Length: 329
Image (cartoon, rainbow, N blue to C red; front, side, top):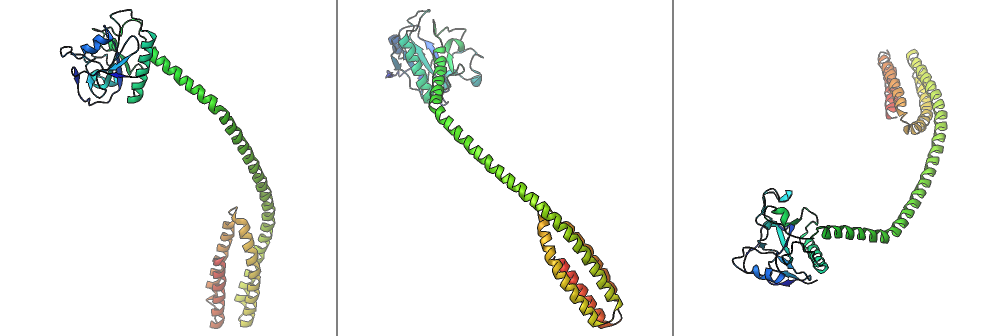
């Protein structure tokens, strides 16, 4: 559709300062041509942005950016909730429908179509919601003085068409997208099934690894317990030697034996600690070593009291060596 222009130089306020947020709908109580001319009369004191004839012709009389004088008189409290106390002219565009002074005016189909088209055009242009809070009837704003739009006017021509168009778009989208959506869904299900299969394999492998680890841990723990007891006995024996002998060669021989055994135990302990790491059993091993170090420190303190300096210094050095060695483990 096309919009003709026949702009008035009278009866409007240039350059509105507020955004356009609504449409106010009127009927002319007269003819299409007569209303356009009336808006040009300086004494009219009224105008509207658009006029629509009975045959569906549209003429613009005031530019959208300017304020037309079409709904400035209104009943307080009848304005929309979002614009309380604001003159409707400030935020609205006025549309006049020809009614030929017929209170039972039926609005021919061409006029209805032109009205619906113009409403959609302006709503899109100015981002106006097409609902009853933003498509306002003049008689609702000023019920004490106005009854327009008269006759068989129905705002449902616009709102119902909007519902139908929105529904049509949804149906078209569904018909277009559903097959693709189904394909995507099937592909996603296949991915999920494959992922679940991979996860099941991982779970089985983890279960097998856990069982193997438990067997290995049990065997290692048993062996480690025996070795710790043997090591403890060896330390006790070594302490007895230190306390009972003054022979330097005997002490050196005992140290050599202890170092040899310690090397074997060190290898075994490293293996055991590595196995225990995942189950946080290393703390037990550390606690045992700390207890051993405490015992060695006590014996080292006792060794300081030995009479022969050369034996005493050697024994203390041996204890220092063993303590430092254990701490590094």
